[in-house]
Length: 439
Image (cartoon, rainbow, N blue to C red):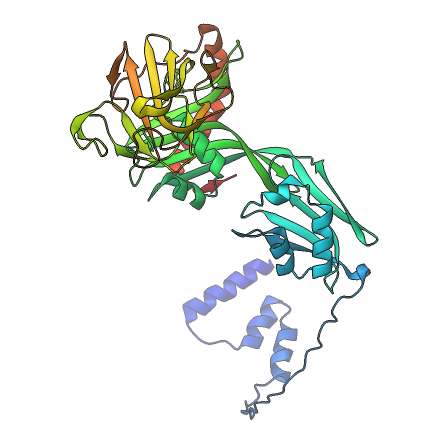
């Protein structure tokens, strides 16, 4: 009934089109609006007056925090190792007093890790406010930490194993200038960059083939301690796009215990030979049938490739083989000849010296260090002369088609397909999103 009455009143208002006082409409409707009306009656609008504004400026003196003193007020400081640092200069930079620096050095003079400070690593020191050294920690490489603790006025220093956890890290980057420049920009350790170059070295010549805009993605293991990375481990999967062509490699260990990297279709990524015996260098002289010899001063064939590199650079065997000769030979100087299956021979000349155990009859594996760059024999500067011979004839190692390494056995294909599937998905993700960093 009440709703009907309101509807009738509203209809009458529209039909008659005449004004009705508000109190009369409220009386008929029965809505409790009296409180609202009363509120309007007792709260008339007030006139706004402009208030004067005064600016007040007052100098406040902040209390200075008390400088911590005494061993009870100790704290941990971190010092990042810079190029050229010694442990003494680093401790002085974080305000450790000279007396304690000398005392620590006396206690730790046999610690190998302190003689090989790595730039970018962090040394943690516990000190008091006045620079008294209480303890020190330093993780260089591996799973060992140098620990030094103060006992009265002396320091006890030791190396101890640290617990680590393994994490899987994903990174992706684009090459603008060099591989190492790209890996540094993406926060990828140098050891991973070297692994990356080694994995794809049979398909990509990292001396000649890299181009601006090439990109790569890598999935690798990394050991962490207390939330900080300690050292990088093994690459689990990787992709490299060179000149628009995509290469992929996934780590796998077969039923016979052989470890290697395979394409997602199960083909071995690695060839029987590496393209280059050096990790990174530049070619100073290529394979040619007519080259002006810098010492003999006449034109003659140069049936090998010269790689300019700093003295002492490691030289790797490009394939599994047996040492056929290791010694001095005419213009080659110190030279190594490796004999491989299928009638292949590789030659490494002008070496400064040979790696330990490299002698005639010794067996070497692909990628194993066999010598060091020098300038013995007929050489005007430090470089490696490398030859690739088939049936006794020198062939250009930069252009020749290399034989494949061991294939994936049929009995391993199903397991490889299952284990590689997650890595294929992750590489697809990195390729499509071009992430710079993803953990």
